[in-house]
Image 1 (cartoon, rainbow, N blue to C red):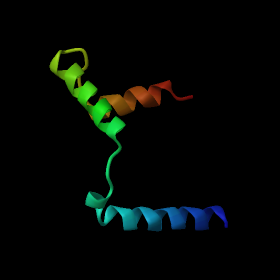
Image 2: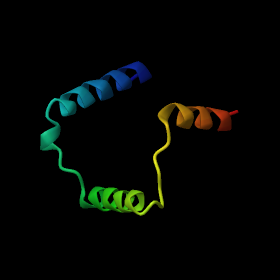
Image 3: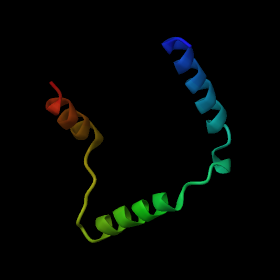
Image 4: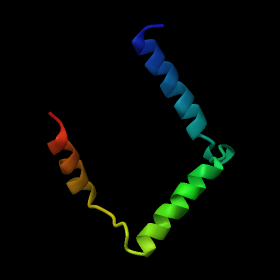
Length: 63
């Protein structure tokens, strides 16, 4: 398969999966991580960053 064919196949699979997201069960460790992040937000240990600022920060770290 060429790279283009592989990407097209992946896009097709993703579109198919995205049609029925309720059929995809998240693993238990996902919930554990989300719960921990929510706890950190509630206690002030973490905070949200502005999306535009976050993108700019990431870009500034790239060569």
